[in-house]
Image (tube, rainbow, N blue to C red; front, side, top):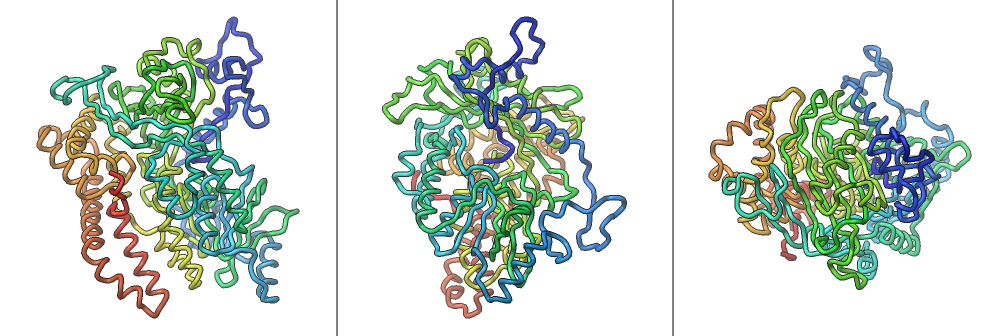
Length: 624
């Protein structure tokens, strides 16, 4: 669900294979069209190789940037030789497009209504929020720089997450049935020092690792193209507005009058009460607000969707899987590679299990954004080289695979998430706010989980004009279980120059998953869907300590005392939020509902939301 993900099919190459000096990755990305299922290059005929070069340039820029302090409350523009951030958003009447300010002022003078109640920037995931708000009676617009359409690449999700959107009315049962193109029983998780499949017993029994199977998790492949097209159609039929091919140039905000969106010199600005930033982790708004910050962590992902795998064994997914130790990449540091795989085109539309040779495979890793970290191309080369070990039905990726799409992205994550707004009348939602777990690739699953909470809160803020940044900030409140998930990312990555036992990550995860699996689906399912709960967390850690007591000093040394102390603070807050949700919320809800002051009522409801979501009590166990 991120703009950094590029999913173009491979393009034809002009060069002949004879005396080919291109890297394996370049050759895979520029395969002949016949190998690429007859597809030519992506938008505008740009080859995926060129798209990778663009992503590579952005990744290099991020790595080479140094963190610096810039105080936006200090009124001198240049501070210690550092210029101000690009002013994409401004509240300064002397800056921004004068047409925007003029339109805002005229709406006040002529007491005309603003164009919309809510304008959502970024349509791929924004359309689902737009639909939820349209259903609640607001005037909603979605603006999208390109064409509002889903990509070819399937999204993997659990049925329960889709059902939540049906209950909200955002999707219909028919939408879901039409969009689900793949269905399989569930996913394997495994952590092994070498490739041995299948694997029985615990880490200490077999000296290799541990694997288990969890049913009904990320076991639906849905077509974003179908889902988005259907939602957009219903949204427009209900009176919603979609503006495609409308790149946003900037936003001006008057706390008292509203916000105006600069759509370029030749276009009329759009005025609105509230702007939602749904532009993902590359949002220019978040970039301006996080000016000078280096990300605290990065999840880098490479992969492909391809045919040519063995049909008979293409029956289940892998949600998180390792089959080697921590890789020493020399000057690029040390990385633990993880795999993820999903079958494509089985279990639906009469396609029996065992009938499809197509699957999507990803290799991902966690690291910091240190300057010496490897390029995406290096990761991609490793992916092609190690894929045959992971998928033994492939012996030579160049001759055995029918590549349909090549996938690559990096997801920067920030400790200070979700992002509280710096401006009034503007709120980041989804990946732009960092609400996704630092362990995941963000996107659709993170959005579905929070959609009801966010749309209800936005409705209340619009009805009572609670659009000041302090009020909107309560919608993106501190979430202790999201903050606690940082420790896991820290444990699965290796700092530059850090000494580590190459088996560290596998031992940690094999023992932990063994214990979680024993505790049953009420522990495993929420964790695999990025919902951290106090019962599962404390229970599995206590049991892991009993199972592997001598490992504790190594874990403490690996993550460091400061991280551990901070983490214990977040875990105790999860416990406190859990207690408040269970004990206080039922008692105070009737009093809150009767409060006369809408602002006081709004703030208490947001507090109760934070207790519920911050302790993982939003997870629906009815399906289990």
